Image 1 (cartoon, one colour):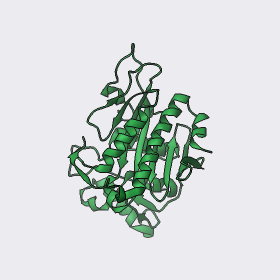
Image 2: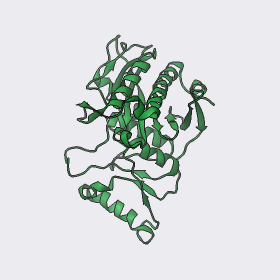
Image 3: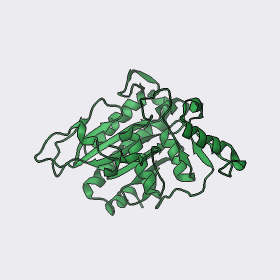
Image 4: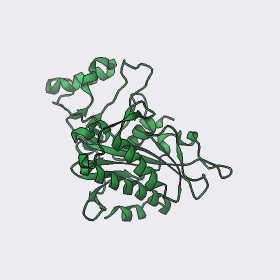
Length: 299
């Protein structure tokens, strides 16, 4: 089954149209990634994004591709991107323009130069119903992750793969580069129940809080430890890459608070990374939490 047919049977036409525009942009990003340094689009710019991170050329190009492609979706009111200082209005909010799109255009861009996995993360919210037609506001995007209508990610690796949920389980699609179609390759993706892997940046171990340190120590204790099995640690440095491996092989991904920035609750962006991935993981039968509550319950 191709992606457009899948969406026809599960989503309203305006939402399907928006999601197809997102994926069209990701097809273009995939082309650029595969062309690599031959396109002279690798390397850093002399600019930082709103997060204070140095932008890569491909960060900005990917962001522009998504903005341009998705603006054509008739039902889209506004977008928000990790690479922008503020929201990107498209149309006024009204009944036939009910959707808000959020995305991280190129997660793991520090991996670009070493040819390791990178990806795009996105989600869709319904705009608050206004009393009358109005422009979108930043506050419209500050909704609980539970309000997401759809979430997905595309991973650019040996294959270009889309993992998508519209609230009815998780499906996987693989891009056929010859036919330019996204073909369904898994119908009901479910997290494996048994695993021997975890993903965490162990170089930060000295900064972790005690509960995280104890858990990882238990994993590293192996078969003779309290968990009774030997574990492998895997870390790609791209949330998309690390979470995708867990979606296929099971395990746990951690990016915890640490003592270097005690006032900062964590490194992941709630809107662009944590909320979409939490929806996908839960729809696949897993759990996503911040140590105290489900990740996407936060507002």
